[in-house]
Length: 147
Picture 1 (cartoon, rainbow, N blue to C red):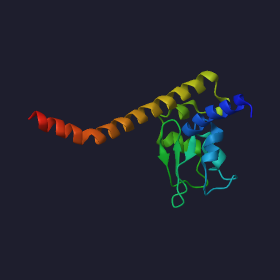
Picture 2 (picture 1 turned 180 degrees about the vertical axis):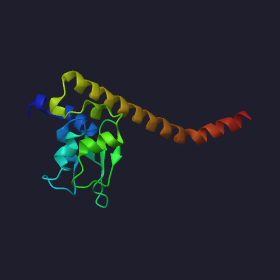
Picture 3 (picture 1 turned 120 degrees about the horizontal axis):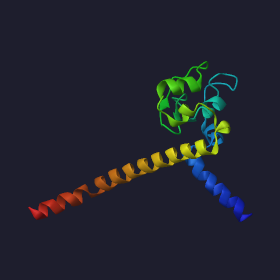
Picture 4 (picture 1 turned 90 degrees about the vertical axis):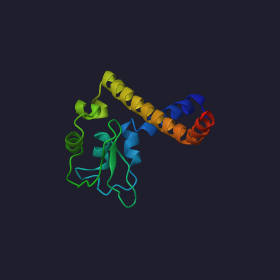
């Protein structure tokens, strides 16, 4: 296999984890209850920035890849763009008001930076929380030794 192809696939895996690309958001929908002909189709959901975060029981749950707003209770006639704007008007992606294919390079890079920074912040919070939890007993022991 050509190593450049493997490297490109590896780079795309990072995009997939962040649901940055519309095609990856489309691929995330495992059990979406609405048809491709509905206003609330998988394609239209992904275009409006949503990826699937549902379960077998709650299959109509989706989350924005930029603002992390999670919405459920979708109806087949719901317009994903309008619902996204209604529930998360502060979202940098929804403010642009256009699908990925119409973004300028500058707009795409702005969204990319927003998503990456949010992901870094989330990972730091998780690390800090785990670190504190894992070391609470050691801190207690240390403070008892001092008193």
